[in-house]
Length: 255
Ligand code: NAD
Image (cartoon, rainbow, N blue to C red):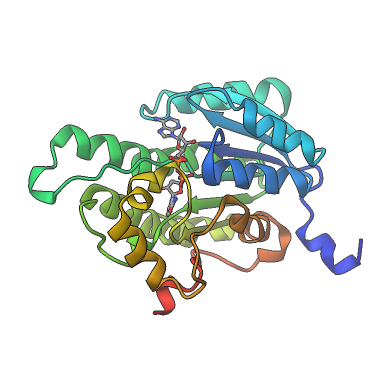
């Protein structure tokens, strides 16, 4: 490999990716594994499809089953990962949930479900991983998955907007405290991507047309569109990036 490209290599690194069984988490898992990392994919249900895709790129993938709606999942993840490796180098906080409802009708239970997973878990899982990095004096990489709704308000998704705005805030707050320990905390804000998260939108002809018309690239994004930014933020190539949210949005925010 050209020497400069070594900057992007993840050879010998260990990555934890949450929500790895499908969608963007699956794409990120494939990308990091193809770049050389051993990926531990966390999900509530089987990651068999992700394992198959990682095998196709000759990567290494281990599934960890955990429900991230409760903080007790953190110990499960740490114990499972440490059964086979002694450290984590990269954490991707990707798991997330969206609930569509008029703001006037949102219940407390719905609010908590979204905020606990999208915001609270992101903070505490990052804290657990960073504790080890600070103790070991070795640093690491955290990539949070934000959203266009950290920049904009959205429609009928107030808890999601609140949680994704918080993800961008947490990314900056943690970067400010942890950059001194060699920990890079950054985020990727995907635009409108064709995954389960957006099935309802894509099935609504008016919304689908309205969204497509506004995307300069003229198409929905795909899990493969996450590859480049994920590898960049997980690798040495982004060593001097701290607290930034990179949009992968086909130009949505440029409009
Ligand atoms: P998705 O619904 O396909 O994936 C969500 C992932 O989160 C799945 O792997 C799911 O298993 C996991 N998850 C949900 N609840 C969980 C729980 N309690 N415990 C463990 N895992 C849980 O959608 P996606 O688009 O791939 O979403 C991935 C991330 O990208 C999310 O954070 C989402 O908010 C964000 N995002 C998506 C889009 C988009 O347009 N698709 C845009 C911006 C941001």
